[in-house]
Image 1 (cartoon, rainbow, N blue to C red):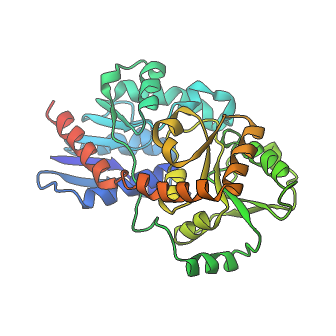
Image 2 (cartoon, one colour):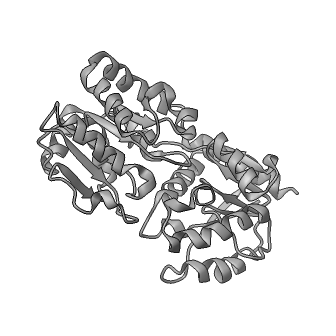
Length: 346
């Protein structure tokens, strides 16, 4: 069978969907699939989102594929072969107030249409699968759990020498808490700022380090304190040392479809403090210090626990890599392939 896949998310600027697609393709290379050929279809020219979907990919689905996979929400209007669609969350439908209008309006229309058009939908969490069925009005049995993975050759506990080198190059001379991911209101940067403000009454040299692009206006960052360090983009090779070198990694998000940065941090042996949103409870409970979502005081208290309780911090550092070992991209690719075989035979 021939499988096509939309490779547009691999073009810059990359987002979390690119990490999913990279992992899926890496897993594909490790899976036995003598009966299947995978083509990654890329745009012929500069990135053009709507023309690419509406015209070029429409034509691509007519090239004899058994199935065509779309890694980001929406296929073309009238595909010429069966399609599968990855829907990573439906937060735009559940909490539209979290998103800027230019991003919100297309996805609110296209995500439900893509789900209904697809022969099958894939996602990474049971709670998200249930929400897709409800919000997009599709039968739950058409939504399949294929999961996510982590590259444990890349994301693993680093040596003390590596941690020291990265800290020196990034000028991180003080103890720091780390939050990683695109900066937008739902990610809880305001909660992190409030929590660290409280914690600095005990540890006055504590800094908050933010890694990721500013994707939407975050009022809390209009005039941040001097102890907030925004690093922007950080190379993957430096992330393990950055994760492991933090006093704690903060994951205060109000909503996620999964949270790949949190999984990568845990794989690196980081101590993590995470909101108790459904997806975090589903996947990460045994390896994080939880706090009540949306509560800055609870975040400060949970973070203080891991700062002051060395036994608890050590237990979490050990639990993270053990949990991450259960998330393998080759397993993810195998689940996709099994589904594509089913769809291709219909």
